[in-house]
Length: 357
Ligand SMILES: *Cc1c(COP(=O)(O)O)cnc(C)c1O
Image (cartoon, rainbow, N blue to C red):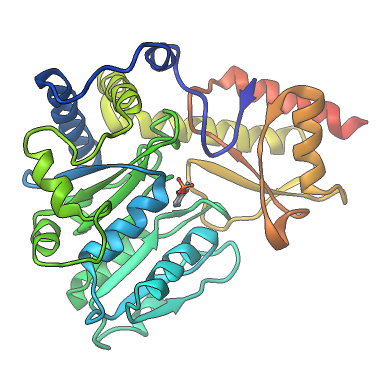
């Protein structure tokens, strides 16, 4: 199997071998140490402030998206949300379900949001901002510096879904004034799905302790309190947390987050250059590419979904199909997970061969 989707992705052999072990009991000092180390390394890689905290949630990324929204916002807030694809739309749905007042910013397909667009919302009483830094569904990376500047000058509480951009694109939580950052286990962390996590600034921690969301499982007060002793309020996905620990230590010993961003960026550039070099009938559809993924549209009339099916069935290669209106138009190639330059050569060879037929 060769997997170029955007999650779950391929894991290293060491991470996989932990998956084969028995899952240990977790109310122990040994497991607390694993959790303390996970918190320390996540904070380090997010470039979070010293007093930031991390909540580890057992649930996919969406669980942490919903937890973040309902723990830091209330019906007294007025939130701006970028709805540039299916993940942005998920934030909108969460805001609707929880009756949090909001305004939607809808970028054009394949485009980011300019500072001119943002300045239309200056001095209008907004209190919160939600963005999926890499809108993975269409492969658009928003300009976080613009968003950060806008939020700083309007004193807006900034929540960033970095689920597919963490470890892929440069990010400095403290310098950008990001109050909440979310990521998940099955993207660039390259572990099985099941854990997502929320990094909270000191200001965000305060907000959580002063808020009363109508939820038990997603109440971050419980997660924060238990986290003080390296524990979680409920049985977590213990095995995946141990795999995350292994992966974080591997990233650290390979040079840390900057080296990992560079490695993934290098794979993305290599693949994009190869497509052009080989004259493949594929066009990149994003005007603002993230390192994690390349969204492509076939220019020879072939259906994007048929390309996905053919690669899977004839070549044993997985790419990522799109859904809805984009099903036949767009597919995506991920650059995250345990992938090498050689793997991208294999994909290019398969694409060449497929287009020849
Ligand atoms: C993958 C992803 C999610 C989370 O999806 P889950 O299926 O709930 O893990 C959320 N936001 C973005 C930007 C993503 O790429």
